[in-house]
Image 1 (spheres, rainbow, N blue to C red):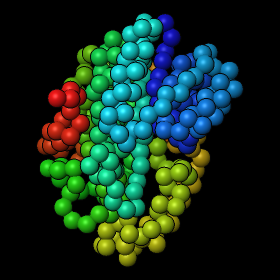
Image 2 (image 1 turned 90 degrees about the vertical axis):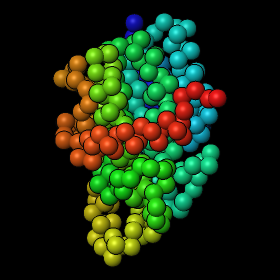
Image 3 (image 1 turned 180 degrees about the vertical axis):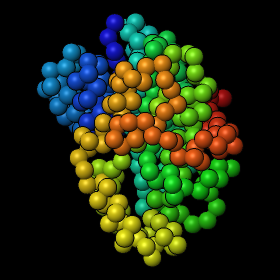
Image 4 (image 1 turned 30 degrees about the vertical axis):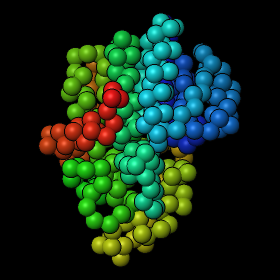
Length: 296
């Protein structure tokens, strides 16, 4: 049996570097992305490193919950047919939007950064449990610190500010990650969050130039905040991928769960709001309502 891994948004940036790191560690890697051309280039680059087993690409738009369901079905069916375990799932997908958008009638940032990885993870839990010991790695962000903590609805009250709404979606996903770790404790499925710190990626390049992505209260300080943020996101994606790779492969994490791996690839304390059981319960209800596991 071989170790196998799925990396979402794995055709470029941090996701591709994560896939390269897992391939180097002996995993048979599947990368997921929207663009077949980018996918082919990613697979070519991974296979050029002479991995133990060739990588593969699966096409899916992770902004579509219907496509997430189809992707989960495909992955589960493939592993059932081959008899090979799925041992690592890295939910690397993420996006920030300067202007409010919707996917499937729901606010885009919440869909991409939380509902999509939530749904994929939940649908693949039987496959991951069958492949135990296995690991789930959800990529988080320092932007959780600017998030509103109200999760009565997908969209919080007030104006749209992309950076804050991105942080709120990431906070929802972090709270879900820690809650899931407690729920799966003892099953052989370990759950981790990985904070990449920062890197120059398609998401950060250009997006942070627009001061309208932050609230008016922060806008006066935006030139300073932006310079600080840009310094923190100037590093290579290969460095930002190290926390995800460590969460997926570090033997020191064996039989551990519910841990946040920080930007230096070592465990760090989770953001306090994400540990609040009231936040976790609100996120759970919201997720189940808008991304049901079974369609009726």
